[in-house]
Length: 210
Image (cartoon, rainbow, N blue to C red; front, top):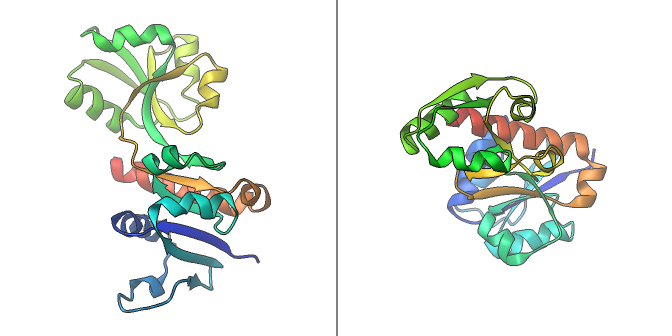
């Protein structure tokens, strides 16, 4: 089996990412040695390699295939403008453009989401807006289309599914901090393994939010 290489931005973000990875069952004991001078760290059992890089260089390593996956701040991605896939994005309020005005009033609206606790916390504690929250398990994008809700709260990746269904991001719940980026060729060649890593990270993130 081919190794999957993960590039991490040095500093606090690397520590946070490693903590999240550990919650998904991915560990790298070598990286915990503060005195090590190693540049490449390996988990032989899972066939994973890790390395730490200057933040601004992570997108470069991923774009050119030196790393299959990278974790970096969104500001770095915007600044670097690299040809990479962003596969782990932010939690947002989305809906048709016409719903934008409803979010500026105290009118009670219905919100559909797989993440009712996150939705409730955002609307009640941050926006101070009374809403009715409907818990869904499937494709929440369907809810505003068929009239079940005015808006949805969901994780938005590329936004293509929203656009294809006449919806858009209306408000951002979580700040744009860390992003998972993937080399395009790696995603084609190692789709199953990379998708699992990203999915497990996403589940860990949403569980911690709950």
